[in-house]
Image (tube, rainbow, N blue to C red):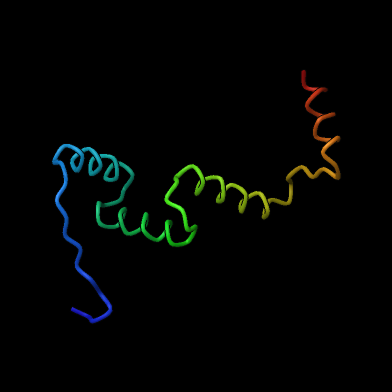
Length: 85
């Protein structure tokens, strides 16, 4: 094994593992890859909170969207919201 690699071993509840495995397999992934991806997300965003990660990804996608709505003031946002009611 390369010196920059590590082997991880842990014990967990079989039902938890099997449930997790069935979910990631349906998504075309595997357990090891899914755990590694999760670890990389934690490192990338410095937070393990899945909702926060999704919000950050959504914000990054919005920054790249040339068709996004842009407001020059918060009052414009409130005005549009009141028009929708």
